[in-house]
Image (tube, rainbow, N blue to C red; front, side, top):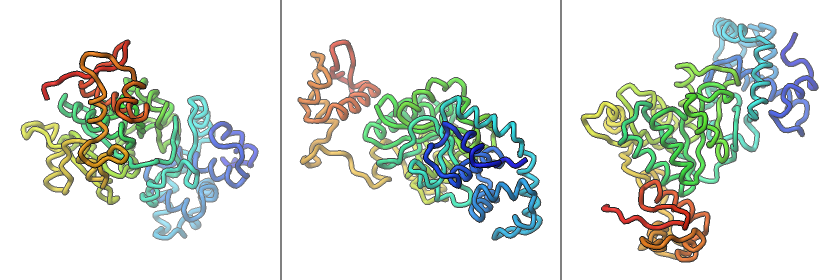
Length: 395
């Protein structure tokens, strides 16, 4: 029996996963793309070429019918390549398992997003035939209003690496730049947490299905991310994260971002794979230098030396790499910026509430809250029952 039986059945299987105002052809195409996410591996260029040639629904029917001659008509294919591709995909044509994946997505409140949808990230189209056929999304995936930066690095990060990652991510997120990472322990987790603490938006790309938190120790962090940003994957719910899928996932992190910053990475770190994808896509690439004696920074030094990465020492370097200037007060020259005005509005002795600080520095309450979050992370401000006050540091 065909996996795409009839429009009514497809519509029932996609209930809650897509909008309800789609016509039968759109439903069939989305259903097929959802099934492809459980049939082919991420980045499978043969699947991408077949779907681009025939559409997802017709391409799926060719696989179900084992139609090797038709598959072989795709540009760049021959009978041998068609045979090998069908041999990869056909063992996964398991209706019960694929239906279970859709049910899992529904249970966790995931949405199916496909190319052409308003929420589809156009940056992913740069991946061509190796791009994702769909995205499974938990949270708020919205078209970016500004640039996005990937902040990635080692799982076994040092305290230096985590500190720098948090400084950079919090500063960028607090100024409205979206932070993208992979939700792993170490640098990824530090970047996500800092972005959230600064009141910014951050997105996480997973190597397995969005129905399972990975790593499990970051289940709370992933739940926090979905409140303002998105947790995404290109593989169907129920899919396990594997080494290959982690490497393939990295191309999505690079593609979704306007720049990639590697904070800490060993000589053979997977973060270098993300950097390679960023470079191949023409995205800006930066690396944070570390102690020359630290193996955890050897990969960053390699990027700086061999791959022409920009040297990143703080968020200002990332903004420069993106071609952005520091935010200035409306109507002001470069002699004063928002952070300076915010510091001047705080007292070292008296606690002041956010609305009072906003009046004193001439900024909106939302901007003040973001700025105070950054100062709290940096140890320059304290928050208590009476509001906020300035901390005098030795810096």
